[in-house]
Every structure is written in structure tokens, then in C-alpha cells.
Length: 179
Ligand SMILES: C[S@@+](CC[C@H](N)C(=O)[O-])C[C@H]1O[C@@H](n2cnc3c(N)ncnc32)[C@H](O)[C@@H]1O
Image 1 (cartoon, rainbow, N blue to C red):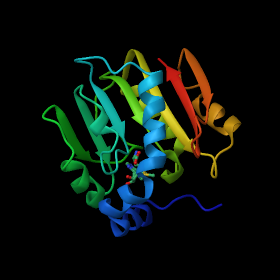
Image 2: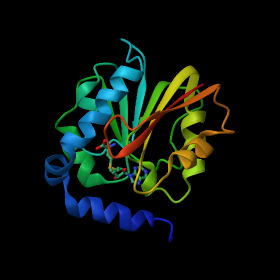
Image 3: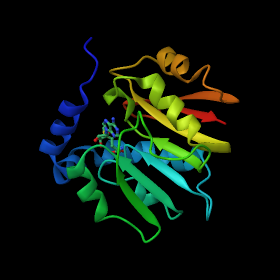
């Protein structure tokens, strides 16, 4: 299968637009956010990254300081409407995170990785940007990934523990990787 082309990915999401994205995917994505909140600790002043934040539906659930990063300007404008004062948005590429090493207490990547040409590089980048004891919460479309592939993607990246949690009644496999 042809690897995703970033320009096409961005144009497709821009064309869909934030309003339609939320209408179409809010129920499905919300079940993944419920799992994220249950499985990870979103503590007070900790700093989080929502990698591939799209229209900011997960950011709306987070009261802690958080950076939302996404490739698609159209979706980031929709995210801007949902921001809290301690949230920041950046346009950027998940394969080349524009952050120093060891900054985030937790990294969330919800239904992002099917869009990336180099999924391994993106996982390494999330690991690099994470602090000691951080948790990476990552979900992967079942239509594009089998469970073992997600496990293989996370192995050998320097995590102390990787749990493939299951699907929590969603269309994605869900994993937590502990630094
Ligand atoms: C299925 S949406 C998921 C969005 C959001 N996480 C959610 O829960 O609704 C995939 C997102 O990944 C973003 N994306 C795709 N390729 C990217 C890249 N290379 N870097 C950053 N974001 C990217 C898209 O713009 C889109 O917002």
C-alpha cells in the first residue's frame, strides 16, 4: 500500500473542515477520550501534548497545560474556539516535533498514526519529547493496523512498559506506553 502523502492528507482534512469533522466523528472520538482519561493521569500543572489534535475535541476535556499540534490549518482554527487559557496550538509535523527532549508529562496521539508515512519515526519523536515517567496514549485505526503491528511499532523505542489495552468499544486499538 502507498504511504500517505502529507500534502494530500492536509488538503483532505482542510476540505472536510472542522464543523463537519466534529459532526461526523465526535461520538466515536469521545469514547477514545473516555479511555484516555481513565488510563492516564491528567494531573494539575503537568504539561501534555495532544499530537494531531485536529479540531481540539480532546483538548476540551483537559484542564492542565497542554499544547495541541496539528498539520492542518483548517482544523486548528476549529480547535482555537475550544481552547482554555493554558492551552497552546501549533501547526507542525508529528514526524518532526518542534520541542526539546523530555518536556511533556504525557503525550496523546488519538487516531493520528494512519496518516503518517514514517510511523516509527513519529513514535520515536513522541518518546523523545516525553519526560521520565511520562505515559504515551496512542490509538490506531483497526482498519489500518492489526494489534501486533501496533505492539511492534512501540517495541524497541525505549519504553519501560507497553500495554495494548484493547479497543474499548471503538474503531481503534488503544495502547499505553510508559517511559
Ligand atoms: C483522524 S484525525 C484525529 C484528530 C484528533 N486527534 C481527534 O481525536 O479527533 C487525524 C489528525 O491528524 C492530523 N495529521 C495528519 N498528519 C499529520 C502530521 N504529519 N503531523 C501532525 N498532524 C497530522 C490531521 O490533520 C488530523 O487532524
